[in-house]
Length: 447
Image 1 (cartoon, rainbow, N blue to C red):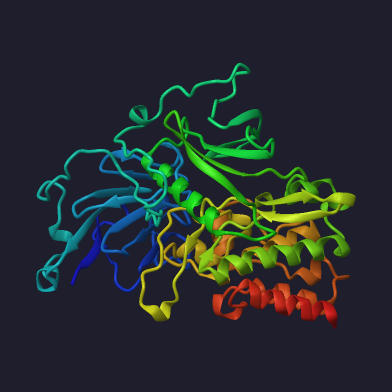
Image 2: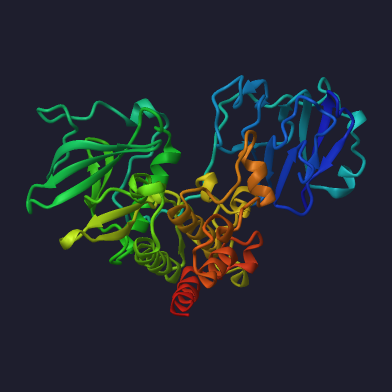
């Protein structure tokens, strides 16, 4: 049995011992609902950092604190370092400076020995210093081993080299002619292209190595390709192919030309959709997410920006759910299987509280919340959370959501009730999955 604790060696909290029992997730900060209070440290943030002890390892991530974290004398986040939400894996003896408090991690396998350890007896000069080395962020990956091999490398420079170019300067990929760059995100670049053998319009997604060249991003991209392959549904973006061109992996998907849901919302009168326009699109979204849930997959980042719109004959629009970059397979708690661990948790404005506090949890009821938050934005033009100046994480943890019927009183009452239930703070109070919510939403429309 492992006993894990953080011992404060210096600062306002000197002498305190924080024993990490239960869990697996612990939040440290000045916020009253934190697992462990840092209220005595004025330099600590309301939500400063999170420690995860699942899967027989100890990991830490900054929660967007003002002063960040310093791990083994290395700044990894906050004002003194590059902002990051990546987990860092720790080992016994590592030090963490948070605010003005210096902690040392103790991991002891023998509980009887652990009970004799006291914070006052632990001084920096008598504990072994951790071996120097690069801080490494780890991520669970369920990538399919049957995918085309992506080289495993030890550095970005070893993997990435200058991509061959077409005459117009765009990247060259065998079998495709790239036409223009249509989107740039934090992890990838999307190009409009033509498939040479069929002339079909295609979207090509490639990793943005200049910003995310680590092996972690490559593994995530391989998982995204694997999941996109599995999804065959009218309202999910269609997989067309993938491969590696000149050392750079790519994913080819269908190209749709109706823009995205967030663009549609922004361009609509009052920056919101009328019910006759919103309802058919939302039903299609629930059908798409329900298909994923039926395959034991969760999306984890449902939001208007990830809902593309296909322009149909006659000017109608159809939903195409896209971006499986954070998707993963879930398992029922009853099976005893470990749930997947993903180091990124979605977009705060549409994120349920548990997706912030417990990254080992990835179940359909979290997608239900995000889908409802998307509908909320579609028909009100506002975000469900009442974000104010300060830390968004605190608002999410407190579940500060204004009821949709107060913002849009003309909505049918039963429809508003369905959305309110789906936005419940407690996961067990929501619909279990998107198909259950779809049935409830249709019933509400019929009454």
